[in-house]
Image 1 (spheres, one colour):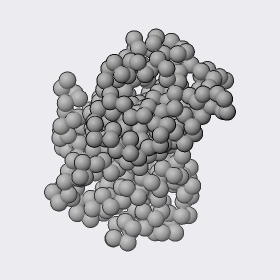
Image 2 (cartoon, helix red, strand yellow; image 1 turned 60 degrees about the horizontal axis):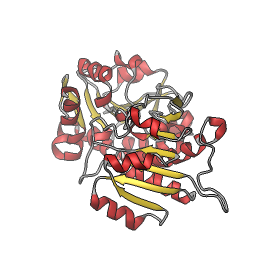
Image 3 (cartoon, one colour; image 1 turned 90 degrees about the horizontal axis):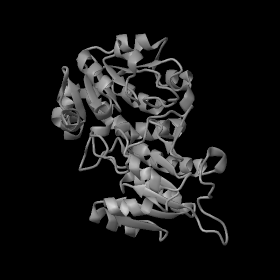
Image 4 (cartoon, helix red, strand yellow; image 1 turned 30 degrees about the vertical axis):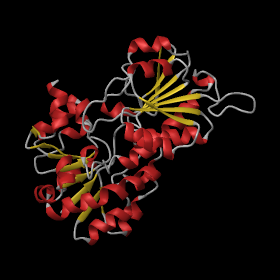
Length: 360
């Protein structure tokens, strides 16, 4: 199979769909890898790295789409790519269809087969979301700490405080991978951390695994309402696989917060878990509403592309290899995890969470 790796053209996206090491594995299994020139440059992988392992370097994105059967990407195709996608293509990437009607329609119109990283599910886990959730969770604390600084219009508090001065209060919504990593980072910096989830078993695990300055709390509307009034940094990581994120903090709640509070919405790819969140970019990452700073960059891991590209390839490679070796039809029959990744086939939505997002 010819596997195409286009250069990501989403604004400020520096990751690439596969590392040279991953490409070598595909080539050793009899596949041809066609990668657009300079696609890996910002991730620290220049063209010679790919050429050395046997990749063919394409001059432009059009060549990649024209010659390839399978497209391996990081982020969803953007409008400039829509016309390049054909029925013969299998597109394997993050899509997040539930929060993007225009993209969904474009992929349906293309009749391409769309397999979404974020809905590949194995043993109740989302293996292709985990590495980027780890990165995004850790980055959420870093970015939150930065925007709490007064020059960034923040509250002006140091996350860990200093001798004789109390630390910042960090509130995390969602006790999954991203939330756990955010809590670890915040706790490690000395913050006073609360982490909310509505799964008691998960809360018990968090209580056992996280340090004493992290308090797991059962998620209810009243508990959230009380905690936002004392929090300086609020990180939203709530995830419903393939579906829109629930709005746990509403517009009316902003007036209950301290001016300079920072909201970091890690769930923005799925529509965000704060009602007032709007997608932003690394170039223009924040919006200030009613004195509350909103950070809602849709591709947070793109800011650390070397780490993110390696972590993503480690997770996606075996699935990509199965699809390439067997074709998507056989791969989905033989592997239920890949089958759950199917979102659009022959112009029809086949993922139940995505269908529900548009039927509600």
